[in-house]
Image (cartoon, rainbow, N blue to C red; front, side, top):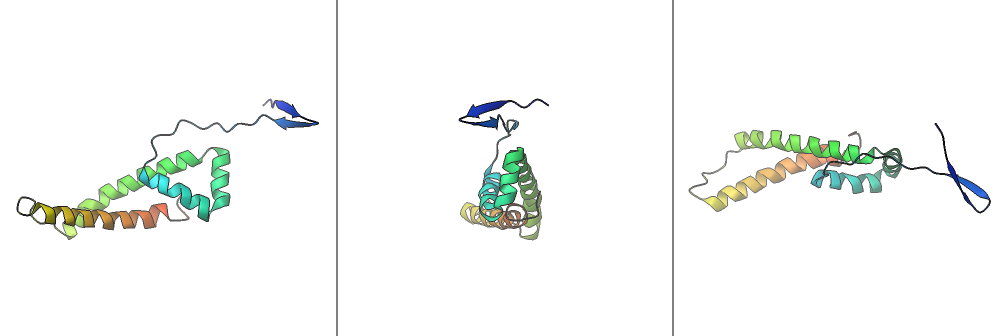
Length: 118
């Protein structure tokens, strides 16, 4: 492994770059995870940034969160059946929004704002 240097005054500095693959689209949950790590676990955030693992981690969080949402919604619908959409559409929308909020609360608690998720 050959390391190149550049001179600044009397000092030589190594030419270091972090090679990071082009990340997939990081969605809502990945973007919520990033400031959580930066504010609550700065050493972990810095380490992942310097090693080029941050975007991969955020992408994994996003995928896991989406999968969890897709799993939770049918279970919540089974436990709390929705009213008939054709009879009262606003009641159905309100019910579905409540179920989505319940599922998101679980996802945020267990994945996004959980220290031990890697």
